[in-house]
Amino acid sequence: SGHQRHRRPSPLPSSAPAMGACGSKTGSAGRGPVVMLPKSHLEPVTLHIYDVGTSQEVQALNRVLRVIGTGVFHCGVEVYGREWSYRGTPHAGTGVFSCQPRCCGGHNYCQSVGVGATKMSELEVERIVQCLERDWPGSMYDLLKHNCCNFSDKFCRCLDVGAVPDWVMNLAGAGAALADTGEQLATYRRSMSRSLGKVVAEPGCCRRDDTACLGCSLEMCPRTTTILASEKTYKL
Image (cartoon, rainbow, N blue to C red; front, side, top):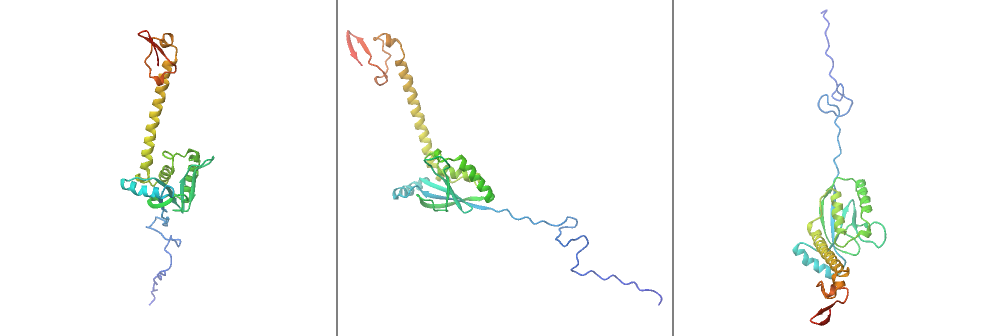
C-alpha cells in the first residue's frame, strides 16, 4: 500500500549510561554521586604494669597488697607501638621516656590492662607527647605525688580513654595524703615553736623582773630564769 510504516526506535544497549550519568555511581534520582567516607580508625591503648624494681621482696609484697586492691607499681602507656612513662632525672630536661612495650628496664613486668581506644592519629599523639615532655621535667618527680602512675593517668585522659584503674593509683594517693598530713603537722609544730619562743625572747615582764615568770616550758625558754620564792633561788 502507499502508507509508510513507522519504525520503532531500537532500545539502548543495557551497558549504555542513562541520561545525566557520567559513568559514576549515583544515589537516588537528582542527588548526585555517592561519596564513600573511610571509617575512623581506633587505636588500642594499653596500660603496662610492673612491680617497682626487681627484688623478690617487692613482688611478694605486691601479691599481698593486691588482695586489698593496691600495690607498689611502675606503669607505662602503650599507643601506636611505643610505651610511654615518666621518671625522675638528676639533670635538667624531661622525665618522659619511651621503650618497647612490656620491656621497661629496672622493673619486673606484671600485667597489662586495656584502657580503651583513641580516635587520635599517630601525629596527634606525637603532639600530645611533646606537650607532656615540656610539662613533666624529671626534676619535678615525686615518689607520691608526681610519679609514673600520675603521668600514665594524665596521658590516658589526654588520649580520651579515661583514667587508669584505681588500684594502680590508690597506694600513691594514700601515701600522698599521709605525707600532706605529716607536713601540715610539722608546719603547725614549727609555727607554735616560733610563737612561744617569741613570747619568751621579746623584752617583757620576765626580763625586767626575775620573780615574774611567764610559765613557759623549760625547752621553750631561751635563757636561764631565776625565780625567787621563799627566800630561796631556784635555777630552772
